[in-house]
Length: 414
Image 1 (cartoon, helix red, strand yellow):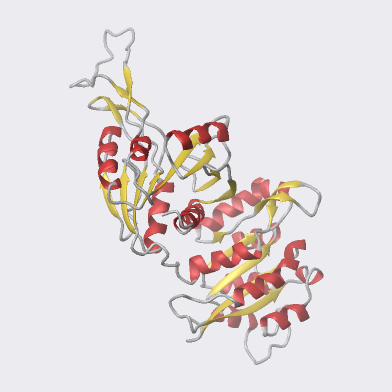
Image 2: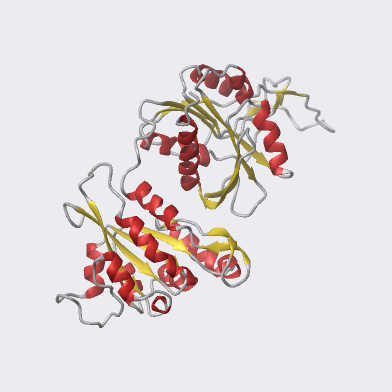
């Protein structure tokens, strides 16, 4: 921490029309408070690239931050130091918003040809990036490769969002709003709000295995990443968390109680029992819909068989069973992984499972669904409300889902 009463955000501003939003972003950052240290104020130091200075002036940023604005590597500093090293050392967080395709490429490949990229290379603080660019630039394989590199090194991305772009195109590329970026800073770097303290939540995650014989089974590609992200976020927000998990290759989130299961029947038994004490139930698992009527006691041999016929029977609809027992004040969140007619099928599941919210996602969409580290979804409510969640990491989506649950718990209907 750079100062006992300050959390310092070094804000990099690059050459995008979205730079005009940086003024509002500075105001929202300076209004944040760390719930662990309410006396600690947020200090913002702006680093403005030459291209960024075409969209917002240093005077504006200096007025709003209350600090001199850094621009050139060789400009005389306020006090003698090596400017990019001093900035890097002072940062508790390096935030780049807006971040162009150009700065993403520099960050990914370790270039340091201006003050911002030099600071980034010397900085050991966490890196939060809010991209802004044309939709085709965002989708370009080079940009996507750079994103993967940066994520592997621990960078956190907020956005971009879908919508109308300044260039006239529509699609993904809009910088996230100042409100969303400031919320991400609060969420990841100033401590989670303990808004689920005293709550018990149940989450199901991962696939199930329905055995044909001792060595063969029916399953699906679910990795459990979304459910585990939800469990980690719930614990960080103060909840007591029970995670009923199918077979996955993920570490147990700290502080979370895991009940390992293998089959859909085992998941149903564990989830129905745990749901009795839960305030919130989230069904993020992908349990099998069917299981073999008969399981062979020994390995089925291929020899002398022209074909093999397997008779299947439906498994228990776990969330629907929980929904039928739902008590007043209890909240249920369902997931719908679909390949067609997304919202139609999700709305039907929402009603059938007696859920309060359903997270619908198209598992055929690029960078979304099973096994991906990112996801995009639509939140649907029983009253017809809908909220689109653009492509984001599953950790980010977990926070958005808990925000929605928190709103439901606080709406006076308990």
